[in-house]
Length: 360
Image 1 (tube, rainbow, N blue to C red):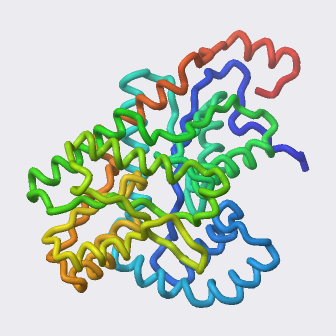
Image 2: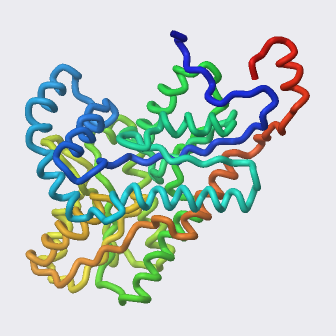
Image 3: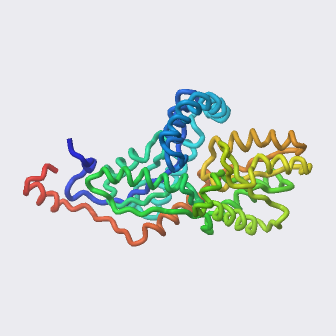
């Protein structure tokens, strides 16, 4: 058996294309304990996500967490699951499809776009195979993480390079590291908030809630915290907000380690105690809506806020497949793919190769 994977669909003289891998975190296949357990086992075993010694973490993960958490998480997933399936997968698919359409309009026949997940399906490995079958000899990786984090962006890099390391013909590769302060990203966020306010009225305060990570990542040089702060500041400036009209916090902490502060649940509770009427919450670090936005923020934290004395917490949706979001990503792709060219079809090359003994 060959040590390295053959190039799928290879033919001499076939035209080249440039592949765009749109990567997101992933989702369980169904809101059931079994599906959630399989997803969590893959997700939480990633050393980029949990940086504990593997033997110790194996015991904790398999002996405790995977016995308790799947049923609880499955219940939360059922709260947000749609008739079409997982919101994260639906929104990510729509975003990738919109990006493919826009790139085709801008550069006909040049790009091929596939969606791949770090955990679950469709996998990054399968997405790269599809791109290779489409003739992709260059690969641009676009993680849907505006702010770089070793727990997310670097994990995508690991999955991609692990896949490429087993291939016989490795494509030329570029990797979009982050876009936390890209003008198109900031304006798209600001526009989505303005549009929400125009339709529903403006709340008394705006909270930017980003996914949290352990504080040791910041101490170790991870730029995530600083990039989140910059995103929040730039959007607030674009909206013309004063310092007392917005707050930034970090959600989704688990375990006993200290995470980035302030914590969203504590911040929401404190704002509720101050009798703030309506609190608007936006989650700029999530490109698409998912469990952490639709259930944790829009449901759990909404309860924390009202129970503490606040009037109403209103969640402002992620950018999802908005046109300005798609246009931003298309511009990022064009910027990072600059200088690449695709080789056209060359029938004569195929004829020469076959004459020399090639099968195709």
